[in-house]
Image 1 (cartoon, rainbow, N blue to C red):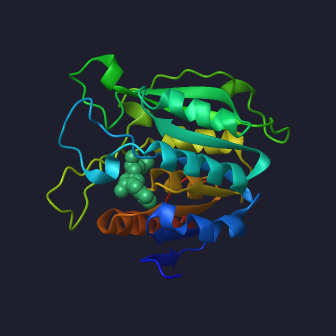
Image 2 (cartoon, rainbow, N blue to C red):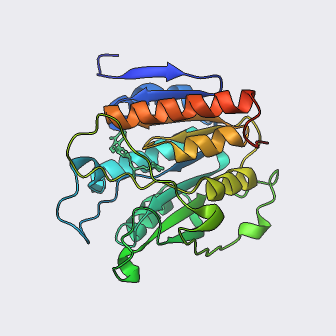
Length: 251
Ligand SMILES: C[S@@+](CC[C@H](N)C(=O)[O-])C[C@H]1O[C@@H](n2cnc3c(N)ncnc32)[C@H](O)[C@@H]1O
């Protein structure tokens, strides 16, 4: 590979420091029809409440979004699901692009006042969606309780997002919208089977990775920013260590 990338492995995870769009063609064939779920949180910008957001958080261009959806379509099995976090501005674009590839919008988990959302602003800015796309429904998992879901999650109690602190972060607007591990554990438990591979090409701090490992799934994460990648790697190592020492509850 001629790209600038780095790869590290744990027992049940692989993380890559690099640009997903640069490496996607190299990993596509390895993953083709093998992925149990894509669960990811692509950058979707926060221009609606600040003009100072950093370049890694600008929403994907139309071209990149299409490439991302095409990749997801190629690597998922016929029946596995895609989960994409986004805001109300990008929502319909994902629906259109996934429909072009034969998926339907199956569900929508709405996270209100998540970690990335400023609380003083109106609801439009203070919520995000987790869109669930499916081509065919899986018969080996029971997703009844999740049909056409509409959840509101407040950043308190069990679904609280734990803010993260990055070492060596430059003085830019850091902007990683950390996701609630309890919610993602529930989703992973409901929609996938043990040992299946979860792919997250916009890894951030690896909340989805932690959720996947704690539910006994395998995880592949990709992150473009060095210090965010380092944080995620240490986090996943710690989770595997804690699981070995039985310090955490896992499936
Ligand atoms: C919204 S955040 C993900 C937050 C994550 N769910 C968490 O819990 O921390 C999106 C992440 O994707 C990363 N990113 C942006 N463009 C990327 C690319 N082309 N390839 C890989 N990662 C990228 C950003 O650096 C950012 O950390």
